[in-house]
Length: 364
Image (cartoon, rainbow, N blue to C red; front, top):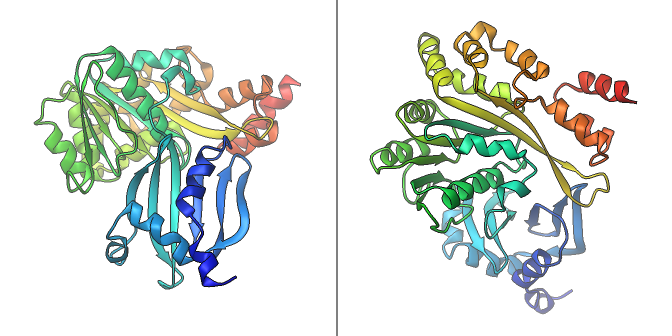
């Protein structure tokens, strides 16, 4: 194949055609001198065997950022790229000792999906009826945290008259003003960091705050302060269970501060949602499985206050005493029983596989 045929390839059109194809996938991977790939419920698949060369990539890179060549020298470049039917989150980076360029693309709907279509139970809405407190949405990378948060914010935006401020890196869903004023800030364009953006936001008369990720002491401390001082705060974290989100948040604080901050968290935490996306039984779509801790009674709060008793929250959830908190295994078992997902895929998603194995066998 000669250079003229390389130059005739329209990669932007291919991406647009792929997005509009109806195929179920979450990510596109474009790597110099390799075939384009998509991430489906069953893993990565080639679109075709034709390698993508740098000449093919240049129009896409320029559309993402005109100065991409200079900026990628300083590190990976994060930018949104809006198409007609969806919004793409693009990460451009160098690899192979700077000899190659790659683009990692996450596909997002142009608008948040309705909360009742996320796969979360209807009673999650009760979390959003609170005027103050902290809601944590957690899970591994690619588990749909961004989509869930956007759906929750859209629900608030539709049903409450308030001021919503988000701090994101990058802005992934653009929220249109409905009943609420919406101010979306991007790190580092609109504010230097999550922690500084959050501190600034507290002086801008917010009712609802969304923090893209809690990743350091300053952000964790400001989130707790905001939750205590009369704001509804939504934040994401990367953990594999709802309980580990609580322990990770408290771990940002020095041991001598932890008791005081645990008391603050017990007082302000509304709940934790830990989620995972699992291939459906047929393998063509994804199903959301979730673990939840609702801090709606004194028992949970008392366990959060005492670091030595945090692990007992797991036993409390298993007993289902409040009919709202639930373990991931409870939800996985229900999905397997409904034949929404296979037992094999449920086992892969579980963080307590032995327990789930026994639960599934007892149902047979």
